[in-house]
Length: 251
Ligand SMILES: Nc1ncnc2c1ncn2[C@@H]1O[C@H](COP(=O)(O)OP(=O)(O)OP(=O)(O)O)[C@@H](O)[C@H]1O
Picture: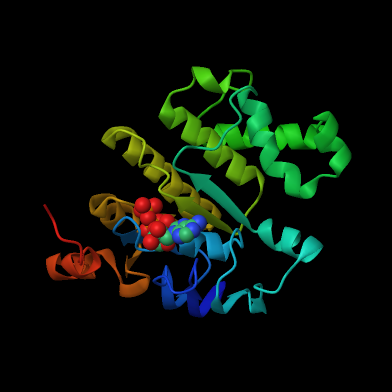
């Protein structure tokens, strides 16, 4: 078992509703998990708890059989090397070129001196070029980030994730800012990486269509609870309605 989440709950403020409510989830190495749910259902909270960007209120997360919620300092840094993030807004550094942005994915492996002086070992640069080749951006190394399209910027984000040599890629709505065609290209790239490199994908999505095409397993979250966990074929209309059920009054 690569990731085991047991009875996980998160309450941002005492007295408020639970953003995650007793979540239990097991993920095996190499799975492609698409997470669906209404805005505010807890998808980002789950991802942020997994990579310890935030601390859960209760429960347990184990990575490769080791409990990770109590990690601090160096052991937390080493744990985080296993997890790469890709984001809706790409989170690139606009004033730096493509290659340097990819190289920042290697920070978890380098000493502070390399980082301060931004001088990277030659083998890192080779790895960065290889990552760029993998995402279809050969020849883009020196291009400023600002000169790239959204789809190209997300490819840089994926190359930055790959150079980290992660076990898991966590995606927080990585294609929500892209047009439908480009979104499919980027999801196809993640699918290829998942199949070729056996990197586990846990990807939050707003599109049921994309989840059904690219997810090998779909998790549906409603008000912090897992209400669906199954294959794309099992995600019928009534299950979709359960995932997207809202208590809010519609105008
Ligand atoms: N930093 C925070 N402080 C307080 N409450 C928060 C915080 N972050 C999220 N929440 C609340 O937790 C709940 C779950 O939010 P979360 O961002 O995980 O949902 P989501 O499914 O990722 O939504 P979206 O699809 O819009 O990104 C929401 O009610 C949200 O308002």
